[in-house]
Picture 1 (cartoon, rainbow, N blue to C red):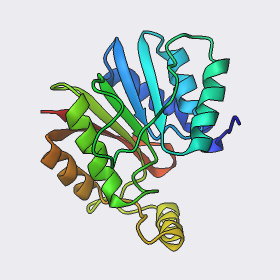
Picture 2 (cartoon, rainbow, N blue to C red; picture 1 turned 120 degrees about the vertical axis):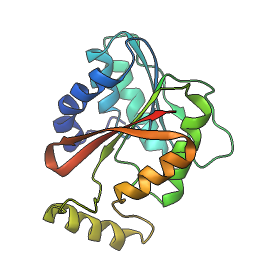
Picture 3 (cartoon, helix red, strand yellow; picture 1 turned 90 degrees about the vertical axis):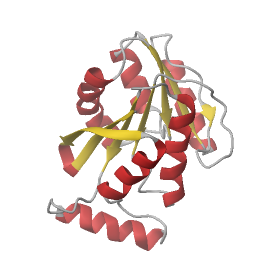
Picture 4 (cartoon, helix red, strand yellow; picture 1 turned 135 degrees about the vertical axis):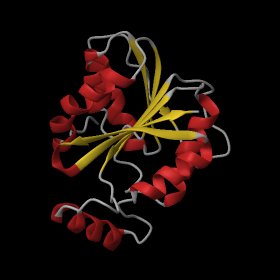
Length: 197
């Protein structure tokens, strides 16, 4: 069943502007945790020279992504694959970039570590990992909305919370990725661009 997300509809254009500057002109982009599939549909039409590989772990999300894919007017929107970043092996061996929006705070910390382990396995040197979502920063005052959201997340699952940017950066560094760009986005979110060293 095709699903829609109001935030995904609102933020797609802003994320696209960042992606245009950091993704390669051609190649395969692996989207981890594609959710509804709206981002994939938007980016495939906006960047037709890139092949977009959506993925998710939830059956309902995979069905929604496929519904969006069937409506897409371009051929670069690939069929979604089941992907668990915490698995010991993955159904993809190579990609030219990874994009992941709004996953690491709605999942245990192990998924962040798994995401960078996956990236280290499938990306070549200098390839980007682009993360989008809310982050806590030691030297930046946290917006009231993000504080409330963080409390809501932890009330739903004690393993969930908005991650500290320095913790994510340390996990990336351990996997061989350096933070190269921090882009402020609407609604108190960030786009973080890591590259494999």
